Length: 315
Image 1 (cartoon, rainbow, N blue to C red):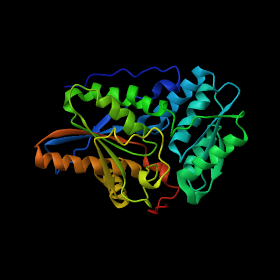
Image 2: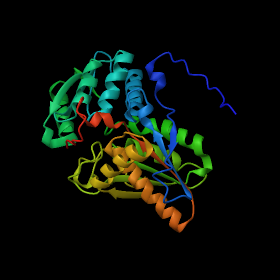
Image 3: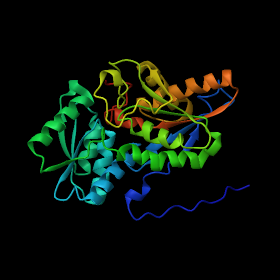
């Protein structure tokens, strides 16, 4: 029987392509927990290639509505994906963008953001994302009239993008079938916003926030909250559980996803899936079933230098 033909959407702007991302059941990764469905929401299907398109779009649109961007350049600190989203959407919406990022972010991210016309300002590579935040705050004290500081770490529109988007989409797809949700902590927007929406559902959904197990870790884009500048939008009372994930677990799972599922994803996605698998195996053993949904934050190609085909990881 021939599958039904699905007509392609016609869009008026790249902005319209943000959201409504697909789900993939991880059959091979979850083979040791066969009574539990594990689904990965493929956020790299957003036009900017990551989950950050959602928050960046809402933050820009709300700033445009309020008039705060009039005559100003939007500036923010980013380790990469939000910067790509800002740059792409800024080009589409006619908004000037300046990005403060650690000097050691991958060349791919520098090249992509620059290609969209964003201005790049580099912070100390040894200070990570926190150093970029400190630098952008200093810039704002010196030139407050030139820039509008979007501040993804404290902007309520970051989690609201997921409250009105990601969470609604998950419930539309799974309804009462979903029992657990897993998302990693970076700015915390995805985890907090989606969890708030899922907690409003008529059926209890257990929501887990995954974070690096140690302060010095290699899970780019994720925060170990106890040793970091804690984002204002993060509320530790929102998740039902906070699960520590080791760097090795995240990296190994990213490799497994490539080898077993044909998915080339970043290490934060690896951490999300490692946590989701841990939950699924627990459910299979203790409850004999369940449905776990987690997030594929981005693709893996942004973590490697272009044209470097050998297996060489750069922290």
